[in-house]
Length: 54
Image 1 (tube, rainbow, N blue to C red):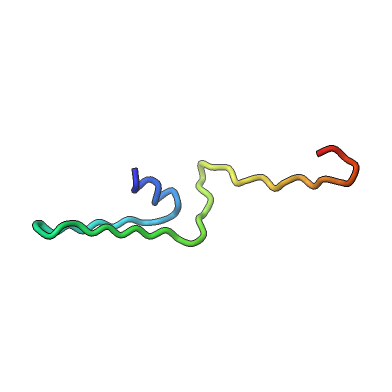
Image 2 (image 1 turned 120 degrees about the vertical axis):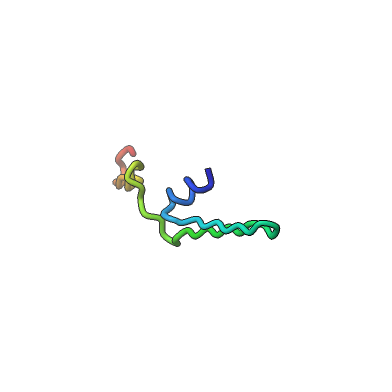
């Protein structure tokens, strides 16, 4: 589940494990997330003119 969330945000996950010492997890997510191909970008709000209903 964590891997899917990281990848959907354009990030990467790395796991290293050493027997008897434990595991190390590294997750990297970029500052700006690209829009996924399966999600629509947010629509821009429509302009509202004075005296006109929204």
